[in-house]
Image 1 (cartoon, one colour):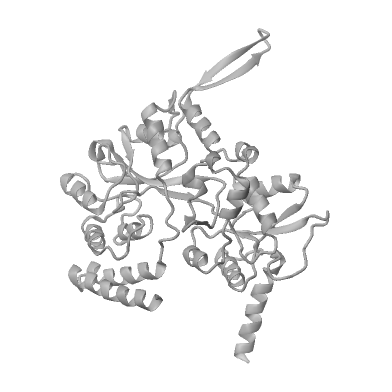
Image 2 (cartoon, rainbow, N blue to C red):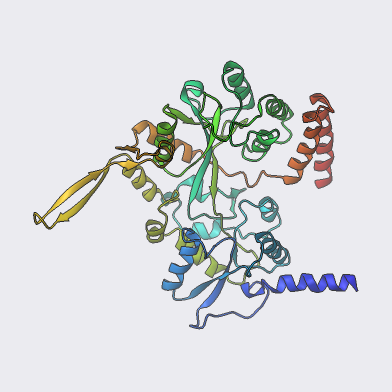
Length: 439
């Protein structure tokens, strides 16, 4: 009886996602006759006015003559985790929405391996010109010649530090981190936002895109975490080289670098997360995938293609970084000059040119006064361009089971119950067994 109830419950969860058109042969149509394409609520949040995907759904439905995108909303009061679990169950049984997003989900790599996400490379080759897009964005979710997701916009998650410490570096390793801390005794801790014991290691294993079997780098990371963890008082601002080595920052445009330099009153370097390949600028976007079991793949592709269109990008992608090269270059040009626009003055009956400065939000909030700048310098523009072009995702390298295993063993070192050598040896033995069982 219990097993029967469990089967009924599982069937109910799957049926909740069947309107996506992935589990039925018939074509679902909107009241106006257009074919319905479904997208999960986690991919498009209709309640969030700044959500680019939700805006895309509205505009697409106003203009496309053949397809209508329907958002599968969460039920009132339903937890996001419950909704995600229901979606996951449906996808695993060849049902689910036509379009979904799991770029921050631990299942991305296994979904690609198990064929749950449609390979978008044939669609790209057929309908898009790769030269029109930033390579780091169009192929951000590519592996072995297959593209498993596309994004309508993205931001750069990075670490910023004082140029006086990092010089012209564009990345850094664990050895670099330890040498810098040893040479700067005035720095009390690594960074403010991950100051607690174990948080640096977590950052290294996730954002740092660590190779889990690089045991020398892992040893350095564990030692570093134990030696330098700690948090600043809440009323003390973290300032690179004064009380922290680096600070985490999300970068949307070149003005963010200008803003951070005004806030810290020093030149800063977007150094990225610690990474043994010294490529630690983390690329984050809402990656949208087409369900490989969808019956409406062409309709789903029409929507993704619409999100990347020049018309949509110009109208809706105004806060984050656009994947289109032309818009990207225009934004760089915009921030490299003061704001200039024409205004008709009725008093004199003429059109005049008005020039204004750019406002700096972080510095203005910290200093409680409006801070402005004419424009970003060429050096700051170049830093931003390099950071964007070198950005990468780590969705294929995350393995939560491995991370949990490592942190479980490392806790014995943090608590003083085992030596670092013993911990690293135990990790190596357990990982050898884990990878052997996966083969």
